[in-house]
Length: 109
Image 1 (cartoon, rainbow, N blue to C red):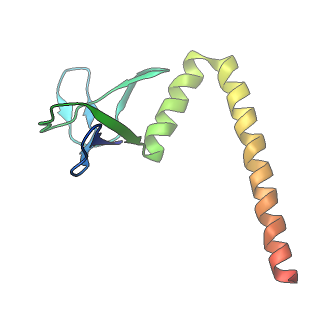
Image 2: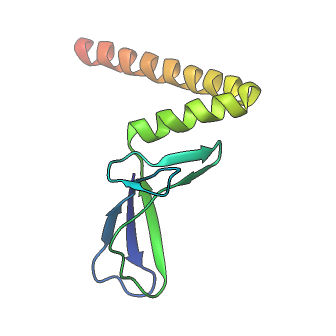
């Protein structure tokens, strides 16, 4: 995961920081992805941060971050995850059908 901090009142340039794994033995593994310690919480380490003031922060997740989150969420909340996955599967099928339809329409135009 990557975190980007931009000044709230004054933005000179964004500060980008990669979030590294925090292992249970308090050592740092300097590789993404971050560590999910619950179905709705994660922890990690960012290095060499020297920021003061108020900041907007944006989060950019790697696919592996999201995959690890979904696995843990499924273990902790199986019923909720079945509903979530069904909803997302339906949305993906609709999107694929729309893309296929516009691809066919584009060829006939």
